[in-house]
Length: 536
Ligand code: C2O
Image (tube, rainbow, N blue to C red; front, side):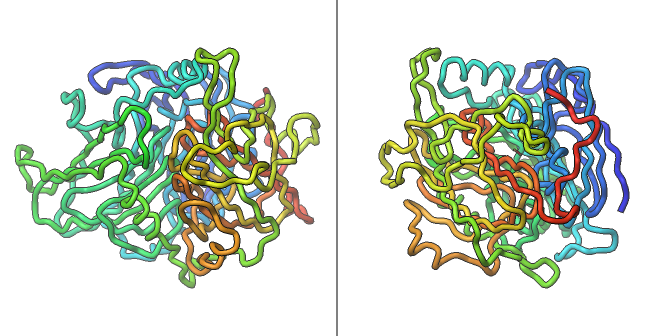
């Protein structure tokens, strides 16, 4: 293993898409940002220098950050933001992880343009548990706004209503030729017939789950969220913001051009129906540029069966080398309702505003980092009384329920002893906007032991849990009007954020944090903060 040094200069760069150009915040002038490469067990040092007028922080999404929460990145959770003109070195070791992850800004909506791939190769000499691909390609799915993204959210917060959706989806930064502006080409992957390619697909979008499809080819799923899966073939993959999926694509045609699509998924579209599909092209060598492209139709936006069938097909590889170590006992049995609601708001344009909550608590961001408050025992920053169950018994009927309407505000955390085990059932309330919520937990991977529609039944449903080969990941879509059960072991001391990875819902309060206490020895404790940790 070695130490890898990276420098991220955060700068504004004029960038043009959809036939117009605007200044955007970037890392090193790139959209999407640079891919960071490392190997399992490497130590990574990224010096982030803030040359823009916004406070910022960068999160290494899915990196466990064992005992190094100071490098995790969410602003006001594990660090104060890096202020304009300042810098911070993120210093972490990649322990026992290999695969595709992503990095992104973790403050307000800056991640719309400040994001990139994070590729962790296996240790030297250690093969993949599948035949080595001829070539590996990072494929980043994202969005493009014609207007300034920070202005979009600030406007929405002021009026108390939903923000605008993006103007286009993108594949490696480009909407592709099929869009409202056709003069810019899209991303092209050149392939040779007979060879196999590994696509490292990343959803870096702010607010949309995405279907990904390739005309005339099947995708063999081999990894999600940097965890090997039992390989399975599918025509369409579903990928939520924050998730990653590695697929093997065998170029089993002799020649031709084939369309790739990235299109939105939402079970019940209630915002302006967003049909913007980004496209890219697979181009076989020897094919003329003028030859026609084989097209494909993306699934309709509300294709819930396509989404569920993909999600239900995922299993951990669970081999000897990569066992699924599901916690079999539970110290903390938690039920969290997640959803949207409407609260009165005197200063809002229409007298009320959309809020989002977990167990009726709409999370209030502190003004100093929670991890600092925890480490230095500073009182008055947070409380550790986050409810383990919904304060109002929840009953999902598909119609409006009171439970998510009256939310309380608070910076409330849930405390876990070191190495305790957690079973957490996430129950969507389906109120206001029935939507699949991709919930991301920092600092851990978790096993997805169960999933269902309607109310979680604590007597019946656990009998069907999978403790053998459940998928392990860091971000999971909780089905609209349904539930997902996860298990994890609290083996990482620190303060760990958990939130919906649809940025609009995070903004509205769909977030909380766990505080995990130190264990006994020095090796079970959070390390002290680095000397250049930003101050608030
Ligand atoms: Cu990828 Cu807290 O985020």
